[in-house]
Amino acid sequence: MNPADDENIKQDIFDQLTWDDSIDASDINVSVLNGVASLEGTVPSYSAKMAAEGYAYDTSEITDVENNLIVDFPTAEPMPSDLEITTSIENKFEWHSKINAAGIRVETINGNVTLSGVVESYWEKVLAENLALDTYGVADIANELTVVPVKSFVDDGIENDIRSAYRRSGLIDEKKITVEVNGGIVRLRGIAANNLVKSRAYDIAVYTAGVKDIIDEITVV
Amino acid sequence: MTPTAEELKKQDIVDQLTWDDSVDANDISVIVRDGVAELNGTVPTYASKLEAERNAYLVSGINDVVNNLAVEFPTTETIPTDLEITTNIENKLKWNSQINSAGIRVETTNGIVTLSGMVDSFWEKTHAEDMALYTHGVIDVINDLTVTPVKSVVDIDIENDIRNAYRRSGLIDEEKINVEVNGGIAKLSGIAPNYLIKTRAYNIARYTAGVIDVIDNITIV
Image (tube, rainbow over all chains, first blue to last red):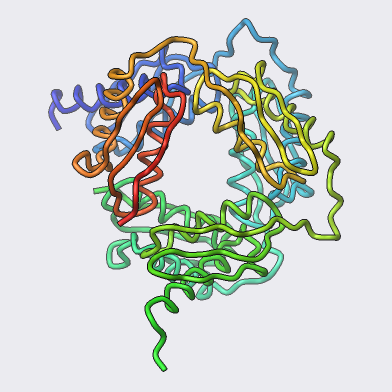
């Protein structure tokens, strides 16, 4: 990859971050070297930090992202205390129509949130993190939730469920993307034509019953 | 007797709804005719009603979905009062790091939530609706929010921003999907090969600065 390519890719990432009206990108610096994007500077929320990382990863020819963005909250707004942040997140879980929050513990130290305890499914683990991440005052999230399915599942059954869902979607080429399940942990490998297909392959695994964790090694070519 | 193509599609949708671990599909019945799926029956939350529809769209060969599902809360569940639903949504909006909720009014009558007042952008309008719809006790959400952008953006610039974002994504075929912006209202038309591309085209328009509404007439072919 030559420096001119890196420059074009960097411009694309920068244009994308500037275009998205929900991200204040005025203090984000992007550099690209040999397919690795680095993000430096500050953003006003953790969700903006994660969104910026997502856009960098989605850019073709980017194989890795170093996200050094610092969350710097606007001074005009009063900062919630760690206890207020914890309570807000706990309440969001409680009021959500789909998540069973009974086994989830939330702790916040200096805006760094840790989710621990137990949920029944992997999609609930993902949902809990997504609900926490756009809470005002959150600087970082460590998701240590353990998935303990209520029923017991057989690895072959989980594999078949994922493969059948792939077939129904008509989007996942099963000759190119492989699924292996061991002890409820799904490993996805192979190549996808674009990041839409890659994320659909991942999402299908997220919503499959019995899944405890997903290792996504699909590359976009 | 070998099943017809429509019977196979119907079975695919039934399997899809059963597979998705986050959707309670016990009381959903499906009819398929000419690539159009009709969903009838009941679901336990408003969120499940929308997710069942999305799942049907994500089955290959389905071009449109008619959603007749009714929301029926399980009798074992304590339903929050209208006042509790209103307060919960107001709090979720206030604690959200991305939305400026100062101008949003929430009213709930028999589980039907109406959002009114003002937000700065179309993506905030849709975010507010998402937060409302995933709340316990909600049967429906009527989104009457008015979008008043802080900065004004000229229609031709909004169109160019959307087209450039389409180009950067590498996913939207600009010969097949058309964008026209008038008075900040983005009208999308043309054809997409599947539901993921259609929703990506919509989402790109949604996050573009200056947009006050998106009318999505893209058909899946």
